[in-house]
Length: 96
Image (cartoon, rainbow, N blue to C red; front, side, top):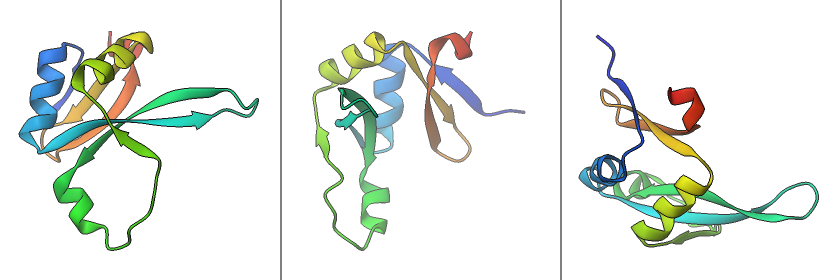
C-alpha cells in the first residue's frame, strides 16, 4: 500500500508541515538571465538540528499566507511520503 499523497488544499499542507514541526520559508534565486524569483522551502527543526555547520542559505521564514499564495501562483502541490516523512514540491498538473 502506497503512502505517497499529493496535497493541494492549503489546510492539508499546513497541517502536514506543522505536525512535523516545520515552518514555511522563501528563498530568492536568480535564473541564468539574472532575473530573481521566489523558491519555496520548508524548514524542519529536527532536520536543522542534524546539521552541524551553520551557513546562510538565503532562506527567509515567512507567513503561511505568503507561502501559500506563492504556492498557488507557481501552481505547485506538496507530494508527501507519509511513511518516510519526506516531501517534494511538484507541479499541480503532475498531481492530476
